[in-house]
Image (cartoon, rainbow, N blue to C red):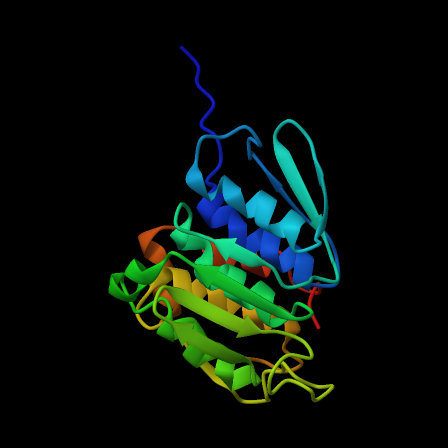
Length: 206
C-alpha cells in the first residue's frame, strides 16, 4: 500500500520560530495539525505568544510577529524548550518555563546551555530548579534599545547537542553580522539536512 509519513514537529519547530522572528513568513509543509506528536505543542505556544499564522490540512505558515511573554508548563514537550527560550528572548516581558528539571541531563544541560548562549546577546535568564525565567524585551537588564543583540564576531556553541545547535540558528535571525556556531555538525543526530534547509531561508533575517 501507499503511506504518507507526516512531518516531524520537533524539526519543524525551529523553522516555524524563524518565521516569527524573521522578516518574511515561513511555511512548513507536511505537518498535520491533528498530529499525536508531543511537539505539536509548538503550534499552541506560538499562538499564546502572539505569533500570527495560517494553517492548511498539511502546512503551517508563521508570519513575523510581535511576541509577548507567557507562563508555560513544558513537561510534555521538553525538546521545544531551547527554541522557546529564543522566542522568549525577543518577546515583550518575561516568560517562565516550568516542569522540565530533567533537561539538565540530556545531551547537554538544556537549561544552562540556552542561558549561557543567549547571554551573549545580552539576554538575562534566571535558571530555576525546574526550568527558567527568560527576561525578554524591556525585561530585567534588557532596557537598552539594542538588546537582545548578537555582537559582531560572536561565536555560539552547540554544546555538542543537536537541539542547542538549531536553537543557535534561530537566534541568528536577529543577528546584524555573521555568527559562528561551533559544533554545528551535531544536527546530524536528528535533522541531517538542517543547515541546507535553513539556508533556503536566506535573505529573511536582519
